[in-house]
Amino acid sequence: MDYNPMPTVLPAENFDIEADAGALRAAMKGFGTDEKAIIDMLTARSNAQRQKIKEHFLREYGRDLIDDLKSELEGRFEGVIVGLMLRPVEYLCKQLHKAMEGAGTNESTLVEILCTKSNDEMADIVSCYENMYDRPLVEHICSETSGHFRRLLTLIVTGVRDPAGTVDAEKAKELAQALYNAGEAKLGTDEEVFNRILAHSSFAQLRLIFEEYKQLSGQTIEQAIKHEMSGKLHDAMMAIVECVQSPPTFFAIRLFKAMDGIGTDDTTLIRIIVSRSEIDLGNIKQEFERLYNRTLYSAVKSETSGDYKRALCALLGGC
Image 1 (cartoon, rainbow, N blue to C red):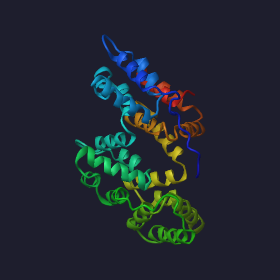
Image 2 (spheres, rainbow, N blue to C red; image 1 turned 45 degrees about the vertical axis):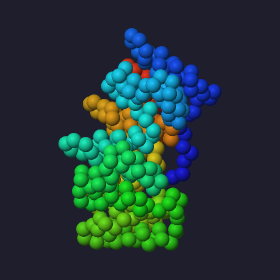
Image 3 (cartoon, rainbow, N blue to C red; image 1 turned 180 degrees about the vertical axis):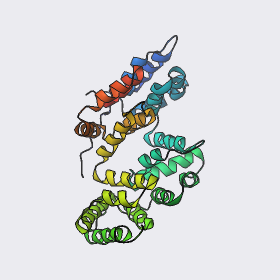
Image 4 (spheres, rainbow, N blue to C red; image 1 turned 90 degrees about the vertical axis):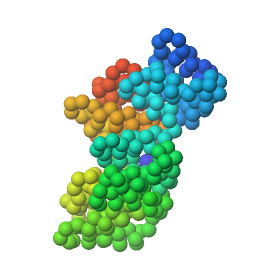
């Protein structure tokens, strides 16, 4: 599905670095903190503009803006604001590292970040991760995952996917047949074939393959994966399929699950809203309303509170 990405955060017009840096310094200087001033400014600037403010802040005041923000803010609100101040690739790398450090691994976060990226985006993440943590991302993933799930993530991280837009109609038919032969047409499942095709083909090519698969087998690729796969491998393959068909739908569903039931998965809520705000959060809002018959803004507003709520709602751009 081709779509027109609609960000909710755009570069501020008449951008004044000196004025912005001064306003942030004033918001944090002395007794108390002006949280509203911080929210109003940082949610209305693009990431590139925030980086310029951060650089000017260091030159002008000799202070690290992120360190100052951390010392003045706390909790989930701090998580939103610090996330906005990091470069997008740095933010995703921190999220990946957090998902793998300590006891246990948050495989769901790995799937969300890694299975939705193009080769170019993946290359940026790989390079940044090693610079930040002095450890190859693929090595860290291999130490925290196993089996066919590890193999799929490894293929994605090593950048084997064809360039964006690469399409071959005849090859799509061949690969659809290969998927059928590796799953429905045999006893058991050849996961390596599924891994290879889903990790190597461009998203545009996968769209064609999935169409051919339906023509060939009479069922959708989602149905086939549901029958043939389980656990985290199933989740990773479904993430790829959903992003091939509609990235906004994938993220809308993730947001709904983060807020559904008792308690809120604030880490996922923050990560998606912050990381997609300059990409397609407008599309995600539309899909959320279409799927759940309520606005994403109203859902977030009911699940959050205080400055944390105000910051997320500002990034959403209202109802």
